[in-house]
Length: 383
Ligand SMILES: Cc1ncc(COP(=O)(O)O)c(C=O)c1O
Image (cartoon, rainbow, N blue to C red; front, side, top):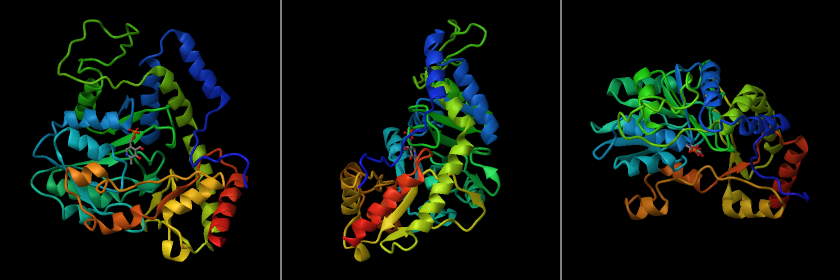
């Protein structure tokens, strides 16, 4: 058994990263400033998006966006239940109705046909998720959004570096990214709003900083122009430079880090091919590039003789960490008790919610670490 605990994810932080953060701390300017401006510029260059607004998390991005779109009671937002709770929670906090849509049983992504069946005259926005780093089929989703005059906003938390049909995720339309520590790049906590709609970009930029007419940082005064006025009430969601500098360094090597993830993912596929108790996800049939944010499998409890939770506990006993992405949203306490959601409404989501588990995958993970994971899995199922 492994002597030390292997987490399911770990940020890749170099000595130079630490040095760069230290340099910002020593510089005298640690909040939003030149590093944020550079991170946004680099992000635009990397993804090809027209406008990028950095924030303290993707959840902050969602709040600013909902406000910018004046979403409120009477509006409906369509999103999968197989996602992190940020988007559904934000919709509820704004008084909107969350309309959950089922996912494909084997890719865990929504498709345009399923979404269309949930569209009503009250639908304001659809927010599908590029799941685990695979890419959504954007062609059909864009056509659907256009046909019904609703806004398509991609939840790209898992998809930095992913591509659909040769197009980088974020390059077109409107999308939201997360820089949480388990994501493909991190700023500790952080997020980015990417859009090709300049009006929306500017509104969100103002809302992220008290609704002032300018950003937190003015390049001429090296601070906020004291004359700036509130044009509408806004939030305090600006990313500090001491975090942004980490993002700049991480973004510069995201392709290399994603390549390491890819190699490990392929190796998992090989090494686990004979493990009948685990059902891998399927990759979509269309042209896309995976960023391998997560390596998700499903525990076949009938074959394994144990549940997913027991499987996770057995691996933990062997010093192997795992993740759960995600426990479906619609059956969580509040959603059941206050909103009346019931089991049986989203069969593929619920089936997966009971069986999915994320195995360790991060750029600095070694093949030896991976062999420990595979060995522990084999041992658990032998037992
Ligand atoms: C699919 C998805 N959406 C949104 C988020 C929220 O990101 P953040 O933690 O930066 O607010 C996450 C993060 O876990 C996520 O996985």
